Image 1 (cartoon, one colour):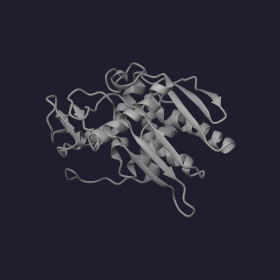
Image 2: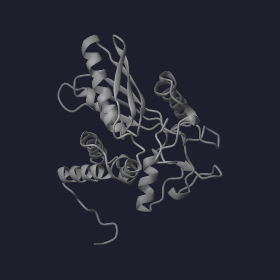
Image 3: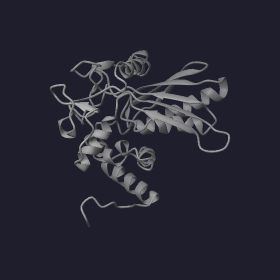
Image 4: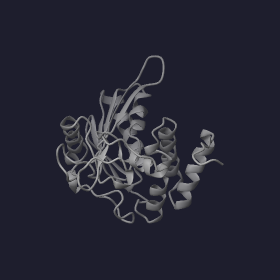
Length: 266
């Protein structure tokens, strides 16, 4: 096979391969099913930063017990339209799906549903969860904080994460409208994707340890906010909504995804 040649795998076969890899690492069946679903969702839309490129990370963290494989998941209703979902450090794909189901139920009963999630692992492309509710006729906004990897506008030391935002709206005839973005120029997964393919990146994506723009994905020390100070302001908004309001660590205090794969993130 020529170097760089593409390999095409049928969707169902790829999903099964994903699931088998996850269960072999130790992830329970139901959680593996949902994680595989989200990885397929990302890959088939060309969002490879949240698809198969993440498999090594997930399986290593699963094998090292960095995810809680037997979580005690709990939903607490805090008002007619609001609640919190305790993920107990389980894999985030499964936790976020269950939490969105609770939000959907709240919205069906009272017209609007707001659910915050405490303590979950990486949840993949959050547009999946926005679309989950939109397919049931609901306009949806989802946000998620992440660990610090973005320098402030004009700064050199990372503070906020990529802190993505997703919005979805149903349509009368057709699939929902879906908008899903990181508040950085590109998500960290795009750096991982470039590293896996040994490809350069635009010099507008990230900076090196000296705070200088770089085109080498292996030299990336931090990402850049989209639209300068405007993107950084959106990061702050997401950090408050998905972190501070739920009593979670904020900004630079959010624990790293990659530092110690045997430890739960707090």
